[in-house]
Length: 260
Ligand code: B12
Image (cartoon, rainbow, N blue to C red; front, side, top):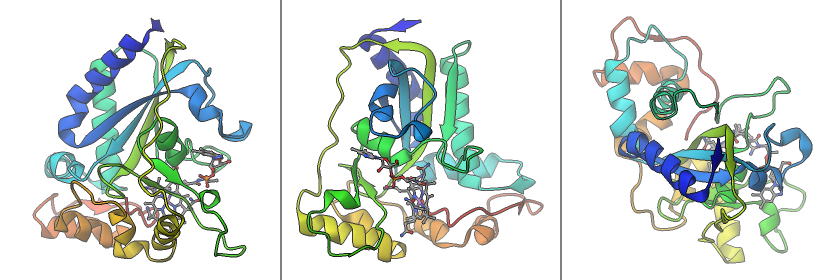
């Protein structure tokens, strides 16, 4: 199937119809925009003119999608409940909107056999214009010597109160050359602001302060903060104290610090 830019808008609207009211945002991009900034080992194995779509979760996802999901779930072995919820929402939307179409879905927590992430979420967010990715190299005269500072994306409306969840690649959809690449809004233009942002993200991300680097239109609820501040192994127990999940449910495995 060949897609013009108007088909791109149609694909976006169809996904939004299923995912926007669950607290997700949809951002189309061209595979080539992503591949252009990465070395061959990290590029997507699709042609540069193929359509991709990035899915973000906003603060509303927790109340609109996650809590109803755990309420209904018959979870005997919850690995990571949020990851499971996102997978359920995204895969159902794809199945409903694009039955019979080739769509490859990658999630932020999935690794390749090489142990590299299946996609670099922050790079994808930057190149599709969703959220500026502030990297160490974006700071002039760095004050950190040789210390490695991880980069962080800032969303123009949610600051740091969001997560990057999934990348969909439409293997059979060609985007025409008229699709314009949007620049992500540079919400933290000053050197001092960027230093403060990277230090907050790297040195004390647990205090949430990096997320308020720009005034957000919405932040995580107290319940969502309590959930993500709880160690992954204890989260199922927390959900149970809130009255979600049956008594039999238990965490099968807990992965990383998983605070998105
Ligand atoms: C591994 C990982 C970690 C590791 C290592 C971090 C790292 N950045 O390497 C650890 C465990 C430390 C970690 C911690 C955290 N993480 Co983490 N992590 C990831 C994960 C799974 C992969 C990141 C990765 O390996 N990147 C590989 C490196 C090499 O990529 P890179 O540094 O960006 O380099 C590339 C770019 O520079 C690009 N490039 C080159 N030139 C150019 C030019 C342009 C313009 C662009 C755009 C790109 C580009 O090329 C390079 C590769 O060759 C991502 C999810 C994902 N799938 O991406 C989440 C992710 C980065 N983590 C996230 C978060 C929130 C956290 C934590 C706050 C809490 C948590 N979830 O546990 C902490 C905070 C960091 C800290 N202080 O420790 C969020 C960040 C959201 C945001 N706003 O940016 C992500 C995106 C997860 C998500 N679902 O949203 N994390």
